[in-house]
Each structure stands twice: as C-alpha cells, then as structure tokens.
Length: 267
Image 1 (cartoon, rainbow, N blue to C red):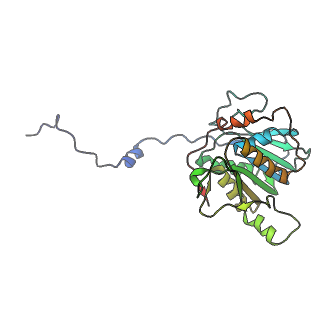
Image 2: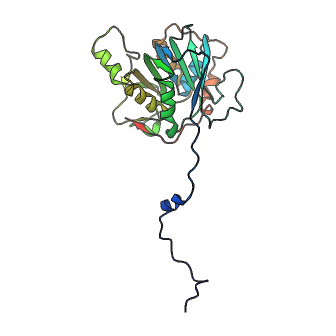
Image 3: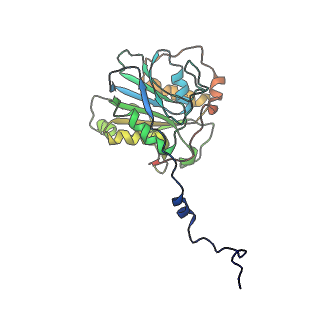
C-alpha cells in the first residue's frame, strides 16, 4: 500500500502561466501628467521639437535663449538627485519656449528612458491635447539592433521618416518647404521603435505634419556636430552659449540615460 504522506506528489496539471491567474495583479502605475506655467490651455505652436537622442539633448542644452514653461512628470522616475538648474545629468522631461515670447517654437527635452508601455501615454500628452503644434520634429538616434546594415562608429549619417500629411505637402508643391529637405528617407528593412515611433504614430493619427530624424552615431562629438548642422537648417537663427561647448562633455553623453531594450515598432 502506498504511503500518501511520503509519496512524491504528481506534477501540477496547471501551466505556469495559468498559475499566475491566482495571484493578484500588480497595481497600475499612476498616469504621467504635465505641469505648465501658463494657465492658457492648450499651448499652440508653429513647431514642436522633441529631443530624445543624446546629441540632440546636448545641442539644445546649449541654446542660449530658452524659457522653461513646463515639465512632464513620469511618476516612476524619481526626482531625487536632479539639480536646481537644468542639467544633462538630470532625469527629467522639460518643456521650453525657444527665442520666442509667444511660444511659437517649443522644445521638449526627454532626458530619461521611456518604456514601451508608457510611450503612447506620453505621446498623447505631448501632441494633440494640451500641446497642439502645426508641425513636429522628433530627434532620435539610429539603434544598431534595428538597422539593416553595418554601422561603424567612424561614420556619421542621418535619415528621416515623415507622416503622410508632411509628405503630401511636398508633393502638392505648397509654399511650405520640407523641414529636412537634405536628408534621405530611412532605408527599407530598418525600424524605429520606442518613444520616437509612438510620437510619429501620434502625428499620423492626428493628421499633423511630423518628421522623425534619426542620426548616427548615438554618442560623441561627431554625432553632436551632425545634429547641430541639421538643427541649423531648421532654425538658422538659433544661438548657443559659449561656456559649455567642449568635446569632453560630448564624450560623456553615453552616461546621460539608459535606453530601453524593447518597445513597439514603427516601420
């Protein structure tokens, strides 16, 4: 007769994923939100620039005339350790008005990594509700894992992706010229993911003229110089402060923020 107390129990009839049904779900994260200095909502702008890549963050950090008008709070990102004055080392997402008292050109500096499940919520906050732009320019880097081809740290290049309304305006030969007329389109077979993809998708859904610029390399002085030349094409009158211009700062850009490993794709 078998000893039911010492006999090895039979294997569970449940799959591991079924066992999770008996555990309470994790509490949902609080929603991200905007804090704006202006009480007039929504903010309207002729151009909204969203800097995600480290080179673009460095370039816009050195812009002389910009006014802080708001910030985007992501509750899971701690504010402890951030400096009083804006710094490239802060984990923050600040909103600025560039060289303009009527906020016709706005800048968003995204200085922390955004996970896949939060990308669309942030894109919704930045485009089309509390901030309504006529045009959007997104600055991100080429991710080697998503690029179809070999990438060398010694070469520099940039590509673009556009929404259908932006491309249609070019084909109609309207008075408005392309934001980045000198750049080729992102090669077929390569992908863009993460927050940049969510932002461009948001522009497409809202029928907003949107352009995504992706550049290589992700870090270093050569990448900063390339991005600076691209931005000069868009905003030729932009002025930069002299005291923070140095290649030593650029060489440390890889420490600014961590990049997410996976997210939803935009092809």
